[in-house]
Length: 210
Length: 128
Image 1 (cartoon, chains in turn yellow, brown):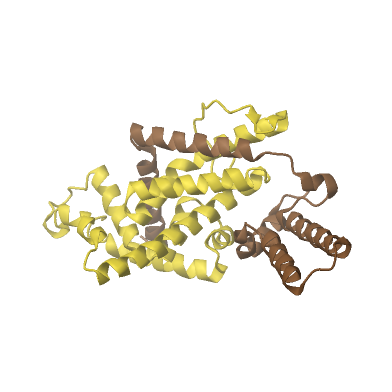
Image 2 (cartoon, one colour):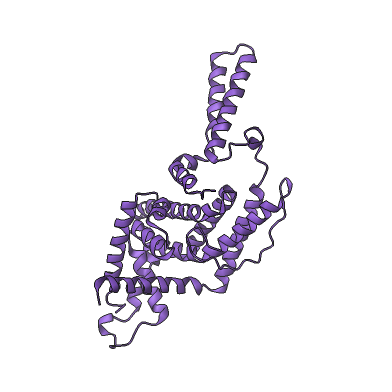
């Protein structure tokens, strides 16, 4: 079954779905729709979590963001046609991420004002823990987990809009038009953000990804 | 190697690394995700209460049309109430109008903020 994004949905879903809503039993059509919703969410949840974790820099906030997005989709738009769920979910997820970043920046300003900025103290540049690429033995590649860590950190350092364009276009495989809808911007902006993201990412990974 | 091919190879590596990152989420996190998903599905079940507006306006099912129908209904009810009720002081009338404004203001302000997105979604709906 293809999702609205065109990616094959292969999520595992073995939940017991409640058969009775607040007004009594639900019909067969509703039950099918709810099962389809469960499968859709199962197909997007892991990528959504990684996307949010890379963007926020921490898994706990990422989990809250993904939960928010799932709840909003399910409770407000779960009865929309299934073909729209992908676009809706991505829009909701990106909006929630932007809200998080706005709050984070506001809190950062207050904390800097009062001399306390925990996020600065907690963030560790993972690139510091890796051997200097210039000192690495020729032909010795990064281990797989180091490759992923380096990549995720590099993406995390991109401006938010570039991150979004990169993840939605490259990882989710959305078209320029669909990415523009998810990001709430023009198609021209998507192309610009994406192009800059790719250029900057290649530059950041120059020494680590031969 | 041509620059375009080099960039394509790079992007394939990025995508592959991200896929690996998503596929190797630990068990505890996977369980937490499953729990979050279950709550969302339950919320969807709970939200499937009868759309009473559809009983009066069966063809008005999109969010925009349902909202418009709700506003029209409220205005009609308010107008009828004002007409049949005894003479009121200006303060009472102002309070009624304020209540009407509060009632008709959507608790889903997000609808207005994302109206262009919903219109696009309607256009994207498959034909036939």
